Amino acid sequence: MQSGTVIEVPNNLWPVADFFMKDLGGQVNIANETEMASIIRGFFFLYLTVVVLAILAYKFGFAKKLSPLQSFIIYILLFVGMFFLTLIFGLNLPLAESLFIIAVVMGVYRLRLFQERKHNNQKKAEQ
Image (cartoon, rainbow, N blue to C red; front, side, top):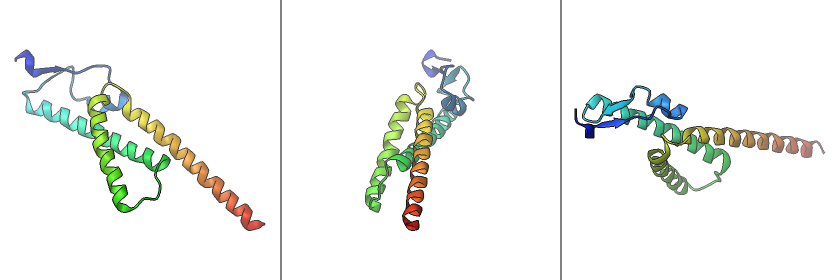
């Protein structure tokens, strides 16, 4: 086996990346099709996780009523941007974990805002 065909896999990945890359072991032979398929599958699932969490964070925190074309453009940009972020930072930084925290905080904020508006509308209806 040539040394140029072996990639070292870090053993200190963040939890979500580690979950998707758990089948790799310490080294990956890029000439082996099954090992390359494991890398690609793990990256694809990590990418999908990051995209879903980014969409949730966007919807909970920043989304406004837009036309369908504008929404389509926003989501295309999210898909493309998250690909590059996952490629660059997905294994080295807690990207998915951070997006999860952001989505939870924004979801709680949105829920509290909805409850407060509902309560205010009920008060106005009673008066």
